[in-house]
Length: 192
Image (cartoon, rainbow, N blue to C red):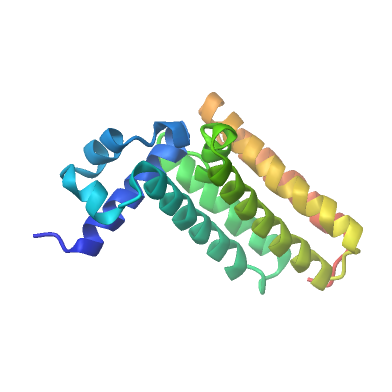
């Protein structure tokens, strides 16, 4: 018999996967139950707040995973950190046959516009990524203004590349953006 945490974790993973593929609007109770192969009673047992709690917890979990990945690379040389970041996304795209992208972007465009709490959660996650990247660039010697714009550009360009890669079923957009990000990092003439 599955332990309580296993069932809950399976449901959260399913919700994240649904967000990656189809946005937050696709995260319905029925879809999560089918995808996670869990009984209906599990939803309200593990998520007494229902669908809203499930979506919020899944978004938080996905945000934590990505934030941890970004944080884990801040002590590495910047080019190496950029390579690891884009390798993560390449693997995500190819292992899902180009069906899965960023769950945070999926929530932003597929549900957050009509749900203020979800909108705020998405904004908080994107802001956290931006701040980590900006502060890393400043610590490496970039001016605050330049680090600000490069951090925004990196997040925005990555999200756009992921969308294009899914549509084109090709890694070319991700590779092109990764190359351009490396050029931008090199042009900053930083210590790392």
